[in-house]
Length: 335
Image 1 (cartoon, rainbow, N blue to C red):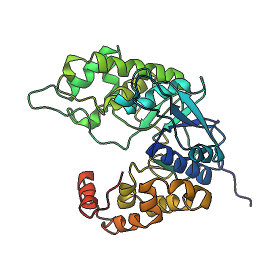
Image 2 (image 1 turned 45 degrees about the horizontal axis):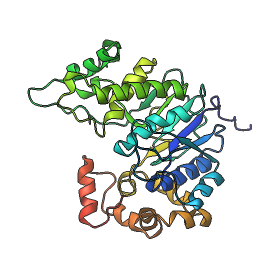
Image 3 (image 1 turned 180 degrees about the vertical axis):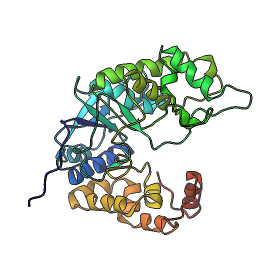
Protein backbone atom coordinates (compact mmCIF):
# COMPACT_ATOMS: atom_id res chain seq x y z
CA UNK A 1 0.00 0.00 0.00
CA UNK A 2 1.47 3.40 -0.92
CA UNK A 3 2.47 5.62 1.99
CA UNK A 4 -0.09 8.30 2.76
CA UNK A 5 1.28 11.81 2.29
CA UNK A 6 1.50 13.99 5.39
CA UNK A 7 -1.20 16.59 5.64
CA UNK A 8 0.06 20.14 5.13
CA UNK A 9 -1.31 23.27 6.72
CA UNK A 10 -2.45 26.21 4.63
CA UNK A 11 0.54 28.12 3.20
CA UNK A 12 2.24 30.56 5.53
CA UNK A 13 5.30 32.76 5.39
CA UNK A 14 8.47 32.46 7.42
CA UNK A 15 10.39 35.59 8.42
CA UNK A 16 13.89 36.02 9.82
CA UNK A 17 16.07 39.12 10.19
CA UNK A 18 19.21 39.39 8.10
CA UNK A 19 21.73 42.21 8.33
CA UNK A 20 25.44 42.96 8.07
CA UNK A 21 27.66 40.53 9.99
CA UNK A 22 26.73 37.41 11.93
CA UNK A 23 23.01 37.41 11.12
CA UNK A 24 23.61 37.31 7.38
CA UNK A 25 25.60 34.07 7.65
CA UNK A 26 23.11 32.54 10.08
CA UNK A 27 20.39 33.47 7.56
CA UNK A 28 22.15 31.34 4.93
CA UNK A 29 22.20 28.36 7.28
CA UNK A 30 18.54 28.88 8.15
CA UNK A 31 17.56 29.09 4.47
CA UNK A 32 19.66 26.06 3.57
CA UNK A 33 18.15 23.99 6.40
CA UNK A 34 14.61 24.99 5.39
CA UNK A 35 15.25 24.00 1.80
CA UNK A 36 16.91 20.68 2.75
CA UNK A 37 14.60 19.55 5.54
CA UNK A 38 11.24 21.05 4.55
CA UNK A 39 10.82 20.58 0.80
CA UNK A 40 7.04 20.77 1.23
CA UNK A 41 7.14 24.38 2.47
CA UNK A 42 4.98 26.38 0.04
CA UNK A 43 5.16 29.85 1.58
CA UNK A 44 7.72 32.62 1.21
CA UNK A 45 10.96 32.80 3.17
CA UNK A 46 11.34 36.51 3.90
CA UNK A 47 14.70 37.83 5.06
CA UNK A 48 13.84 41.18 6.63
CA UNK A 49 16.70 43.65 6.25
CA UNK A 50 16.92 46.88 8.28
CA UNK A 51 17.65 49.97 6.21
CA UNK A 52 20.03 52.85 7.01
CA UNK A 53 18.53 55.60 9.14
CA UNK A 54 19.10 57.84 12.16
CA UNK A 55 18.98 54.91 14.58
CA UNK A 56 22.01 53.23 12.96
CA UNK A 57 25.56 54.59 13.10
CA UNK A 58 26.48 52.73 9.92
CA UNK A 59 24.72 50.81 7.19
CA UNK A 60 23.02 47.70 8.66
CA UNK A 61 22.24 46.12 5.29
CA UNK A 62 23.88 42.86 4.20
CA UNK A 63 27.16 44.00 2.72
CA UNK A 64 28.49 41.07 0.68
CA UNK A 65 26.92 40.49 -2.71
CA UNK A 66 27.76 36.76 -2.57
CA UNK A 67 25.78 36.47 0.67
CA UNK A 68 22.78 38.19 -0.89
CA UNK A 69 23.01 36.00 -3.98
CA UNK A 70 23.28 32.82 -1.90
CA UNK A 71 20.13 33.74 0.02
CA UNK A 72 18.30 34.36 -3.26
CA UNK A 73 19.58 31.06 -4.69
CA UNK A 74 18.18 29.30 -1.62
CA UNK A 75 14.73 30.71 -2.30
CA UNK A 76 14.74 33.65 0.10
CA UNK A 77 13.33 37.09 -0.65
CA UNK A 78 15.11 40.04 0.97
CA UNK A 79 12.54 42.51 2.31
CA UNK A 80 13.64 45.99 3.46
CA UNK A 81 12.16 47.57 6.58
CA UNK A 82 12.57 50.85 8.45
CA UNK A 83 13.57 51.21 12.11
CA UNK A 84 12.11 54.48 13.41
CA UNK A 85 11.95 53.36 17.05
CA UNK A 86 14.86 51.04 17.88
CA UNK A 87 17.84 50.35 15.59
CA UNK A 88 21.34 49.94 17.02
CA UNK A 89 20.27 51.09 20.49
CA UNK A 90 18.02 48.03 20.81
CA UNK A 91 18.66 45.59 17.94
CA UNK A 92 16.13 43.11 19.36
CA UNK A 93 13.61 45.69 18.20
CA UNK A 94 14.24 44.49 14.64
CA UNK A 95 11.89 41.57 15.22
CA UNK A 96 9.20 44.07 16.24
CA UNK A 97 9.63 46.64 13.48
CA UNK A 98 10.16 44.19 10.62
CA UNK A 99 6.59 42.90 11.00
CA UNK A 100 5.27 46.07 9.34
CA UNK A 101 7.03 45.08 6.09
CA UNK A 102 5.50 41.59 5.85
CA UNK A 103 2.42 40.83 3.71
CA UNK A 104 -0.78 41.99 5.39
CA UNK A 105 -3.26 39.27 6.33
CA UNK A 106 -0.92 36.36 5.54
CA UNK A 107 -0.12 33.92 8.38
CA UNK A 108 3.50 34.09 9.48
CA UNK A 109 6.08 32.43 11.69
CA UNK A 110 9.05 34.49 12.86
CA UNK A 111 12.27 32.72 13.80
CA UNK A 112 15.46 34.11 15.25
CA UNK A 113 18.13 33.72 12.60
CA UNK A 114 20.23 31.41 14.81
CA UNK A 115 17.80 28.56 14.20
CA UNK A 116 17.98 25.42 12.09
CA UNK A 117 15.01 23.62 10.56
CA UNK A 118 15.28 19.88 11.20
CA UNK A 119 12.16 18.38 9.60
CA UNK A 120 9.16 19.12 7.41
CA UNK A 121 7.64 22.29 8.80
CA UNK A 122 4.69 22.50 6.41
CA UNK A 123 2.93 19.63 8.21
CA UNK A 124 2.92 21.23 11.66
CA UNK A 125 -0.54 21.92 13.15
CA UNK A 126 -0.32 25.72 13.46
CA UNK A 127 -3.43 27.54 14.64
CA UNK A 128 -2.59 31.02 13.45
CA UNK A 129 -5.76 32.45 14.98
CA UNK A 130 -4.38 31.46 18.38
CA UNK A 131 -0.91 33.03 18.33
CA UNK A 132 1.86 31.71 20.53
CA UNK A 133 5.63 31.71 20.92
CA UNK A 134 8.53 29.61 22.14
CA UNK A 135 8.09 27.92 25.50
CA UNK A 136 11.79 27.01 25.64
CA UNK A 137 12.40 29.68 28.24
CA UNK A 138 13.60 30.22 31.78
CA UNK A 139 12.60 32.81 34.34
CA UNK A 140 14.88 35.54 33.04
CA UNK A 141 12.47 38.42 33.75
CA UNK A 142 11.53 39.98 36.09
CA UNK A 143 14.36 39.72 38.60
CA UNK A 144 12.69 40.00 41.98
CA UNK A 145 14.43 42.36 44.40
CA UNK A 146 14.35 41.98 48.18
CA UNK A 147 11.49 44.16 49.52
CA UNK A 148 10.52 45.05 45.95
CA UNK A 149 7.36 44.19 44.00
CA UNK A 150 6.74 40.49 43.34
CA UNK A 151 5.79 38.70 40.14
CA UNK A 152 2.07 39.27 40.58
CA UNK A 153 2.41 42.98 41.18
CA UNK A 154 4.82 43.47 38.27
CA UNK A 155 2.90 41.47 35.69
CA UNK A 156 -0.53 42.68 36.76
CA UNK A 157 0.66 46.29 36.43
CA UNK A 158 1.48 45.63 32.78
CA UNK A 159 -1.87 43.99 32.04
CA UNK A 160 -3.62 46.88 33.77
CA UNK A 161 -1.66 49.40 31.70
CA UNK A 162 -3.10 47.99 28.48
CA UNK A 163 -6.56 47.11 29.76
CA UNK A 164 -5.96 43.35 29.57
CA UNK A 165 -7.40 40.66 31.82
CA UNK A 166 -4.53 39.51 34.02
CA UNK A 167 -6.37 36.68 35.80
CA UNK A 168 -6.99 34.74 32.59
CA UNK A 169 -3.27 34.77 31.75
CA UNK A 170 -2.31 32.87 34.90
CA UNK A 171 -1.38 29.18 34.89
CA UNK A 172 -3.27 27.92 37.96
CA UNK A 173 -1.19 24.74 38.01
CA UNK A 174 1.87 26.73 39.08
CA UNK A 175 2.31 28.16 42.59
CA UNK A 176 1.81 31.82 43.41
CA UNK A 177 4.94 33.97 42.95
CA UNK A 178 6.67 31.32 40.83
CA UNK A 179 7.79 32.73 37.47
CA UNK A 180 6.17 29.93 35.45
CA UNK A 181 2.71 30.91 36.71
CA UNK A 182 2.84 34.05 34.57
CA UNK A 183 2.60 34.18 30.77
CA UNK A 184 6.16 34.38 29.49
CA UNK A 185 7.82 33.30 26.25
CA UNK A 186 11.19 33.18 24.58
CA UNK A 187 10.96 35.40 21.50
CA UNK A 188 13.07 32.95 19.47
CA UNK A 189 9.93 32.18 17.49
CA UNK A 190 6.37 33.45 17.45
CA UNK A 191 3.49 33.20 15.02
CA UNK A 192 0.16 34.77 14.20
CA UNK A 193 -2.51 35.37 11.57
CA UNK A 194 -1.42 38.81 10.37
CA UNK A 195 2.08 40.26 10.83
CA UNK A 196 0.97 43.87 10.51
CA UNK A 197 -1.74 43.55 13.15
CA UNK A 198 0.67 41.68 15.40
CA UNK A 199 3.46 44.18 14.71
CA UNK A 200 1.33 47.25 15.33
CA UNK A 201 0.38 45.99 18.78
CA UNK A 202 3.93 44.77 19.49
CA UNK A 203 5.33 48.21 18.65
CA UNK A 204 2.67 50.03 20.68
CA UNK A 205 3.20 47.91 23.77
CA UNK A 206 7.01 47.88 23.58
CA UNK A 207 7.24 51.66 23.22
CA UNK A 208 4.76 52.28 26.02
CA UNK A 209 6.69 49.97 28.37
CA UNK A 210 10.02 51.51 27.40
CA UNK A 211 8.93 55.14 27.58
CA UNK A 212 6.38 55.02 30.41
CA UNK A 213 6.78 51.84 32.45
CA UNK A 214 4.44 51.10 35.36
CA UNK A 215 5.81 52.04 38.74
CA UNK A 216 6.15 48.37 39.69
CA UNK A 217 8.95 48.06 37.10
CA UNK A 218 11.17 50.62 38.83
CA UNK A 219 13.82 48.01 39.75
CA UNK A 220 13.63 46.07 36.48
CA UNK A 221 15.96 46.16 33.47
CA UNK A 222 14.30 46.21 30.06
CA UNK A 223 17.52 45.71 28.11
CA UNK A 224 17.60 43.13 26.60
CA UNK A 225 14.22 41.93 27.89
CA UNK A 226 11.84 44.48 26.38
CA UNK A 227 10.68 42.26 23.51
CA UNK A 228 10.01 39.35 25.87
CA UNK A 229 8.12 41.59 28.29
CA UNK A 230 5.83 42.94 25.57
CA UNK A 231 5.40 39.66 23.65
CA UNK A 232 3.11 37.82 26.10
CA UNK A 233 0.90 40.90 26.37
CA UNK A 234 0.54 41.00 22.57
CA UNK A 235 -0.22 37.30 22.34
CA UNK A 236 -2.76 37.53 25.17
CA UNK A 237 -4.43 40.58 23.60
CA UNK A 238 -4.78 38.70 20.28
CA UNK A 239 -6.42 35.70 21.93
CA UNK A 240 -3.26 33.61 22.06
CA UNK A 241 -2.10 31.11 24.61
CA UNK A 242 0.83 29.32 26.20
CA UNK A 243 -0.69 26.13 24.76
CA UNK A 244 -0.05 25.19 21.13
CA UNK A 245 0.13 21.90 19.29
CA UNK A 246 3.45 22.97 17.74
CA UNK A 247 5.27 23.28 21.06
CA UNK A 248 7.69 20.39 21.30
CA UNK A 249 7.98 20.26 17.53
CA UNK A 250 9.41 23.74 17.20
CA UNK A 251 12.35 23.89 19.60
CA UNK A 252 12.24 20.11 19.44
CA UNK A 253 11.86 17.65 16.59
CA UNK A 254 11.44 20.22 13.82
CA UNK A 255 13.63 23.19 14.74
CA UNK A 256 16.56 24.09 16.97
CA UNK A 257 17.30 27.56 18.32
CA UNK A 258 21.02 26.99 18.90
CA UNK A 259 21.92 30.65 19.64
CA UNK A 260 25.72 30.32 19.32
CA UNK A 261 27.88 27.76 17.55
CA UNK A 262 29.89 26.74 20.66
CA UNK A 263 26.62 26.11 22.52
CA UNK A 264 25.27 24.14 19.56
CA UNK A 265 28.22 21.76 19.60
CA UNK A 266 28.23 21.54 23.38
CA UNK A 267 24.61 20.69 24.09
CA UNK A 268 22.48 20.01 21.01
CA UNK A 269 21.70 16.56 19.62
CA UNK A 270 23.73 14.65 17.07
CA UNK A 271 20.87 15.22 14.63
CA UNK A 272 21.29 19.00 14.93
CA UNK A 273 25.04 18.80 14.34
CA UNK A 274 24.51 16.46 11.40
CA UNK A 275 22.02 18.91 9.89
CA UNK A 276 24.42 21.83 10.31
CA UNK A 277 27.32 19.98 8.72
CA UNK A 278 25.17 18.58 5.91
CA UNK A 279 23.79 21.94 4.79
CA UNK A 280 27.17 23.67 5.15
CA UNK A 281 28.96 21.08 2.98
CA UNK A 282 28.09 22.09 -0.63
CA UNK A 283 31.05 23.93 -2.14
CA UNK A 284 28.95 26.88 -3.32
CA UNK A 285 27.70 27.52 0.23
CA UNK A 286 30.98 26.61 1.89
CA UNK A 287 32.84 29.23 -0.13
CA UNK A 288 30.58 31.97 1.26
CA UNK A 289 30.30 30.71 4.85
CA UNK A 290 34.08 30.37 5.27
CA UNK A 291 34.38 34.14 5.25
CA UNK A 292 32.70 34.16 8.69
CA UNK A 293 35.32 33.06 11.21
CA UNK A 294 33.13 31.26 13.79
CA UNK A 295 31.60 29.03 11.09
CA UNK A 296 34.99 28.53 9.45
CA UNK A 297 36.62 27.38 12.68
CA UNK A 298 33.71 25.56 14.32
CA UNK A 299 32.29 23.73 11.31
CA UNK A 300 35.07 23.45 8.74
CA UNK A 301 38.21 23.31 10.90
CA UNK A 302 36.91 20.98 13.60
CA UNK A 303 36.77 23.27 16.61
CA UNK A 304 33.14 22.25 17.15
CA UNK A 305 34.22 18.61 17.64
CA UNK A 306 36.72 19.75 20.28
CA UNK A 307 33.97 21.66 22.10
CA UNK A 308 31.70 18.62 22.04
CA UNK A 309 34.44 16.44 23.50
CA UNK A 310 34.49 18.64 26.60
CA UNK A 311 31.02 17.45 27.66
CA UNK A 312 29.04 14.33 28.42
CA UNK A 313 25.79 15.14 26.61
CA UNK A 314 23.94 12.84 29.02
CA UNK A 315 25.24 14.77 32.03
CA UNK A 316 25.39 18.42 31.01
CA UNK A 317 25.91 21.24 33.54
CA UNK A 318 22.53 22.54 34.66
CA UNK A 319 23.38 26.20 34.08
CA UNK A 320 24.36 27.67 30.73
CA UNK A 321 27.01 29.85 32.35
CA UNK A 322 28.88 26.74 33.46
CA UNK A 323 28.86 25.47 29.87
CA UNK A 324 30.17 28.78 28.61
CA UNK A 325 32.89 28.92 31.27
CA UNK A 326 34.20 25.46 30.39
CA UNK A 327 34.36 26.33 26.70
CA UNK A 328 36.08 29.64 27.43
CA UNK A 329 38.61 28.10 29.81
CA UNK A 330 39.67 25.74 27.02
CA UNK A 331 40.04 28.62 24.55
CA UNK A 332 37.24 27.54 22.23
CA UNK A 333 34.64 30.27 22.75
CA UNK A 334 33.50 32.21 19.68
CA UNK A 335 30.46 34.33 18.89
